[in-house]
Amino acid sequence: MRMVPPFSGEACVDRRWFYRAADVVAGPVSVAELRELLQSGAVSSETSVRPEGGEWATLAQMIPDLVAPSAPADVWTDRKPHPWRRYFARLLDNLLVGSVLWLSIGTIGYAVAPDAAAEVFGLFSGPGGKLLDAVATVALMIPAHALMIGLTGSSPGKWIFGVRVLRQGKAIGVPAAFARELSVWGRGMGLGVPLVSLFTLVSSYTHLTENGATPWDQGQRNAVVHRPEGGVQTALTLIGVAAVVVVAVLVQLNAALT
Image (cartoon, rainbow, N blue to C red; front, side, top):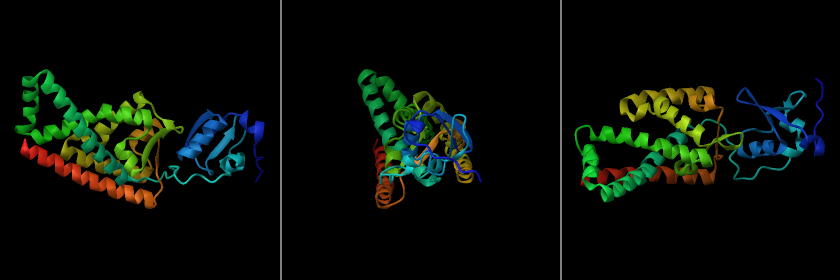
């Protein structure tokens, strides 16, 4: 086997690099961008990289100086599939952020056009009101999720359950996040229709566990990284699950009283 000489100093900084992520070749990127990818967990020391015009080798072989320091304990480096953490993160967002959005819409609606607002919100009390509420809430969360994930790579629920959606170590941007949410809405959540969503959720779960990525992230070449398991994440997960239960109960009590 032919040895690959390591790069360091100016020989490293002056070059542009390609890397393989999920069997897809990406790049070229700078050394600074490679460092960000490494810190975010999008690449690891064992990721195959090559300089422009050069040959493939692991990142540790090519640029040992880049991977020599120990990664900080709070770096999100876990790229294994965590379907249940992702499911509860979205459920918490839908319950918590969705409730805030509906409260804001209702407050503004009743202040500006009370009769129209009463007529619209009255639909949720009529036949099929719960189904309409579920479908409308999931649809309402599309732009909200797109803004949060597109700008920060995360959301309140995703932060608690330790999930980030990145591309080359950065937030994917609002347009890409909006397209992603539309795909999640249809292929992952079955448009929010309970019976349909059961089948789409099972299909998405199977695809994630078998391929290591959901169809929408695989299609966009997104990297979903997680906060590593440990005491901090375990505590946050317990808090998140408790929050899901509490918010769900409060929403049901509010619906019963109105």
